[in-house]
Length: 298
Image (cartoon, rainbow, N blue to C red; front, top):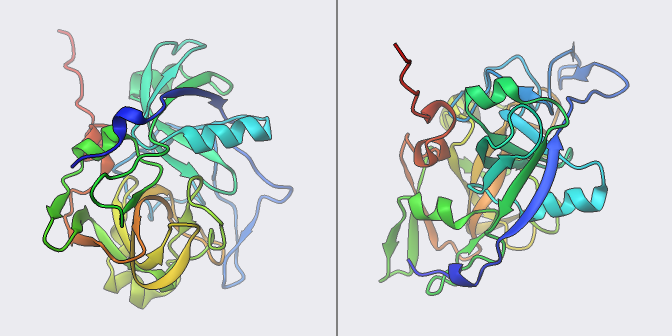
């Protein structure tokens, strides 16, 4: 599959491990009017990783592994724009210096970039440590498949995705763990672009949750959003198909749920999703729960 990879700019962006955040009130209110107090965004989550279930945690918008952010708004905008899923991240300060990780998502609203590290690095990382990312992927395009647009995806991730090409129909067949109707997508609608952030799958309707097996969503799962066009923002368009990745956990507040960062979109429906339970970036990039455990020394 030919792309313009050789013409892409590879550029450094930097942020720091962000502190968990909480509003003035610790409560989140459910659609049933019940107040809940739960851990949420930011920080270092030692036991939540790519490959874990994204629905069953006692949490609200929790982000797997490490959350990275800049305090300066403009610098943080560049961090979010130029970081792409699959990019290499390196710790450049603190006890975990020179440890490397992989970008796994972008969380809109809070505007965090999410990075996966191994357990050894996690134990040494601290709030405020600087993480530098080799940003490459913005501007990526397909030479022959102009009706499919990649977003937020590094060339390294694209190379390991088992995409099937149908040149006769000019379509791409993409493996996904779940197929999701655009009608149940919530928070994040209305954005004028999809180069940063995510939008949420609402899980408040039990019939749809059971029908589409949404209770089995995992961090890192690649999913298809049907009748969704992400070419210039997130809109409902009959026949369009968008592919994304689960980046944060379920949420208890109305309109929210597991977050999806866009990877590919086709307004003309030139993406054909096919079900594959192993379609997870952890599997493809060997990160999160799919990392090989190093042998213990005797």
